[in-house]
Every structure is written in structure tokens, then in C-alpha cells.
Image 1 (cartoon, one colour):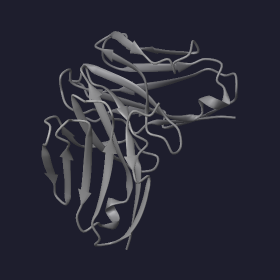
Image 2 (spheres, helix red, strand yellow):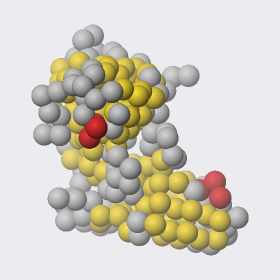
Image 3 (cartoon, helix red, strand yellow):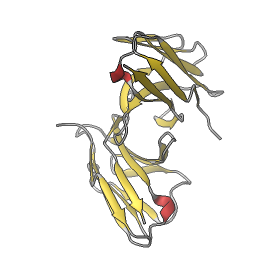
Length: 113
Length: 110
């Protein structure tokens, strides 16, 4: 399977705990994106990388959120001191620079209790 | 501010019927993408349109990009239960940061 993969698929955590999600993009894609999606809404942009450089961060990405892509391959998204409002589906997508369209992973469903 | 408006938000039709969903914006896009998403899964790219007036066909699905590159439509002919899902349009500018619409939730009843 050469698609985008995300791990874990589901995460339940207590408020105040830290969580980390991983995304493995399609291997030849140099762009990687993180989105958040809540029920009844389309995906909302969080941040994007070209290779290892984080080029843009949304205002939705508070100080408790951090994303890395250390070697330009996989990426991690960490949420510190989780809050109930962080409950959502976190989606990762990848694409080629200049390519048309993004390819999404299956998402990580986060539930903060 | 929602930059992309999709209509209708919900659509329930009988198998075999035709339907059209719309994606509208006041912004001009460098490209526009349509995705289909099933519950609990990530969106799946259906098509990208880049040229004003462009029409693309994918089996029973026909996608059109408006002449001014501000709007798009998706037409499904003879809908099947397997077409059920959330249809999302996404507009892209420049380096491909995309903004998604809220989606059209389609249910095709056998």
C-alpha cells in the first residue's frame, strides 16, 4: 500500500494529557499538510510542510500544537495539555509541489474526555 | 468567513435519479478540487479542474469549472447507492493551500 498512512486511527485521552500523531506521506511527495475536521464541517487547514520546512501555520494552531517533519518524510503532530475542544478528526495529506490535488490519509480520531 | 459555499448541504434521492451539487465563491481559484469522503475516513480526490470552462468526466460524474474560475458543479447521472457520501469541494491558490467547503451530504436510497 503506497497511500498516506496515519497512526493511531483512534485516540482517547483525558483532558490535560499530551498526544502525538504520526503521518507517513506518499514517498515521492514533498508536501505534507495537516487538517482538522469536526462533525458537519469540511477539513480546516492547520499547517503545511515542503520537505522539512514548515511554511505556514493557521491561526487555529495554538501554542499547544506543534508539528514537525524532521527528515522531510514522516510528520508528527503533538497536542499538549489537551482540551475537550480538541476532539476532532486530524487528517494528513500529501502532494507533489506543483501537482494538482492532495492525497489524504484515513485520519486520527481524537476524543478528549 | 466561509470562502466556499456548497449547496445543497443535504440531498436524499432515489437510485437512478440525476443530481447536481454546486460550489460557489467570490474568490478566483488557481484550481478547484472535488473529494468524496465516507464516515470515519479521509477525503478521496475525485478530480482537479484548473481551466475556466473546463469539463471533466469520471464515469457517471461530470465536473465543470466556471468560466471565471469562481464556481464549480458536480453532476451525477443515474445515482447508485455506492455514490452515498460527503462531497467536498476545495479551492486552491498558488502553492496549493486549499480551503474546503462544508460539503454536500448525499444519500442514495436503493
